[in-house]
Length: 248
Image (cartoon, rainbow, N blue to C red; front, side):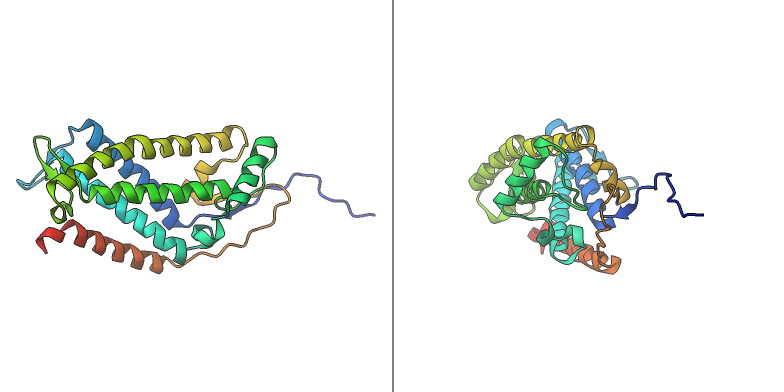
């Protein structure tokens, strides 16, 4: 009697590709960018802290949201050097030639599987981080002239005229740079999901992706949770110092 191979299809292997810190960064960033949009463009989110008489104006909330985004970006930059395999810049940042070659392949047919960011996605991630760093950084020196006048936590370091010029740039940078990058990011993910049949969105929730047939386990390494906690605490302290700089 001869041996026969089992003809039943094997279950695709699910592998962990994103650590909890990358996922938390991503979804907290989405939430606080949305909050910054609501407070900066729509308003009406003023409230009094429950159990106290402390009033938080819409723009106060905008400042807190902006400082949180700055902290998230700072954490992600540090994590890009100290974090897990797929989080590290050295593992997904490539030169123009590699990026262009990859873009050509995705327009022609089947694409190469990347456990983390592909060359084009890695470049976009870096551009987004820099753009958000500029957005949140200029917000530190900006000021709002609405009914509840509010200034960024470092606006006291520059002249009023300079602060107003920075405020103008801060608003235009949002309208032309950040919004464009958000649309590009969403469009790219929909393209991969609907056209290339690679669901990158769910993986950012679960941390896992399905390996294509014949693809070897990437054997990724993941940094410790303690390291992530330590970096997060350090960044939070730094952001608190920035937020309260004028009174220190």
